[in-house]
Image: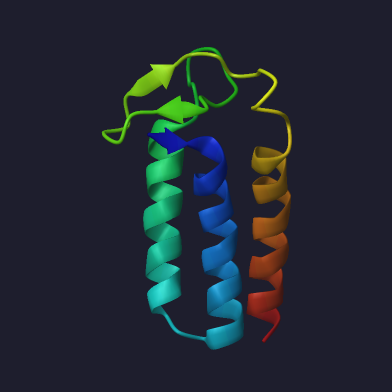
Length: 91
């Protein structure tokens, strides 16, 4: 299974890893994680993001909000990523 929250946290983590190390492999990892996430998780028809996918990216479960999938990881990623990128660009 591919859950939404590890994908969003990977996007943030790879940016932090690049910021502290300067190693461009983390930018490539960021691009891979970000591309996969944006290609599979958002529901372009009805909005919000799917939370539960199979490893091939197909939707495993259509619920977008429940007691486990709250409004934390996606907004966090959408807020933190540009902040980290701004810090990287300042260097």
